[in-house]
Every structure is written in structure tokens, then in C-alpha cells.
Length: 108
Length: 116
Image (cartoon, rainbow over the protein chains, first blue to last red):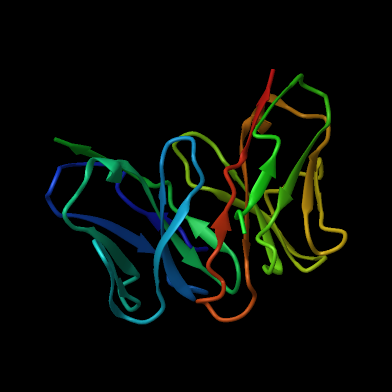
């Protein structure tokens, strides 16, 4: 299986940096995806990692350590619109296994 | 391209009735996925197609659920004899087939099912 663990909730202040951690089981692992989901809306793709290391995309970065079964999503210069659920998903050959999501609340 | 489209957006039905949802993927995508999401949970994989072939189904998928993609374009998900436990958001996603970069899944806005 590919059980995914991530914190249920996090809070942060506008303009700050926040790191959302994710651990997963490594059997059958092919890659790690991050999605953002606002309440009542579709998940939207943020980033993915296949190899160890950091992938940077504007204010969002994602890190992967395959040996440790660990990833994190880093959000910089937080904005109020970043308040959302952040979903970590492990990829097998073609399907995704999602965690329960981390609800991030950004306050002024 | 307007992205992945799902209809209807909301469906309210009585227990025991059958319901059918439709998904239109991004036009050049040959893979199509169905997920179910309940409050406070991440999307749970149900099944996926590559072109018209249904390649994988979740072991958790009840035999009351059936999905089709007859011409490799749009797909339908039918739930027979609905139960209150079927109440959820049903999400559709599509992607290209190939390496991981092509396999990025793009989601529709979902169909919210309420079974009374």
C-alpha cells in the first residue's frame, strides 16, 4: 500500500513561509504530487517530484527524499488566497493515492 | 480547451434510485479517472480508462458502480440502487499516457451527490 500521512491543519500569517510535510510508504512508488484544493472546488496541480531534491516553481517549492519516504511543500510569501487544503499524492504506475489533505489557514 | 467538464454539478436522489454522471476530459487526453471524495478526506481512486479500455478498478468499488468510456472520449459513471453512504463528491480527472510528466492529472469541478 501507499499510506500517506500529512498534518490535518496548519495556520500561518500573511507574508510568512510555511512547510507542509508528507510521508508515504515506498513500495511501488513512482513519484510524488502536490495539489491545492479550495473548498468546493476541484484539486489543481501544483508540482511533482520524481527524483530526490527540490523543485521550485515561483512561490511554491516541493522536496522529495525517496529513501526516507518523505516530501514537503514549501509556500513562500503567503497570501490570503493560499488558504486551502493541500493534498499530497503518491503515484504508482498510473494512479494516485491521496492523503487526507492539510488545511492551511492564512491570517492577516 | 475549457478543461475537464462534469455534469451535473449537483444531484439529489432518493435511496434506491439509480444515478448517472458524465465527464468530458481535456480533448487530447487519453486517460480518464474517477475518484470519490468525502468531507475531510482526499480523493479516493475508483477506476481509470486508457482510451476506451477500463484498465483498473479499486477493490473497494462496489458492484453497484459501473463506468464506461465507449468511444474513448467522454465517460459515464453509474451508481445503481444508491445508498446514503454513496453521498460524496465524484471527481473526474484526465491525463496523457506516458512518463510521469505526461501523467499529471487535471480534475473537473466534480458532481456532488446527496442521497436522501
